[in-house]
Length: 127
Image (cartoon, helix red, strand yellow):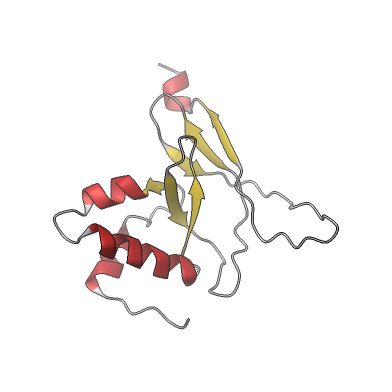
């Protein structure tokens, strides 16, 4: 696809992914950005950022789509295969810095997998 233009919308959305570990649901992004851009623009920019390998998406426990920052991915290949963790108490979702190996299955070429672990984060567990 090529280098993504750094429009105001792109820069604004990318700023939400600066820490690199915590994920943001599409619903939260649309709500947070409602004064700056419409829902269609948010979805369009997220799609472009994912196509460029800057962010990745995955499904959360309740079917919501979540987005998080990629590391070492490109527009040709998402190689950021890792599990995600969703806290059942506070709802925080984050990327886990754990590598997983995708299985080799005859007659199939697996490119990606969604692995979601749920439980309690340390903050909620210690309450």
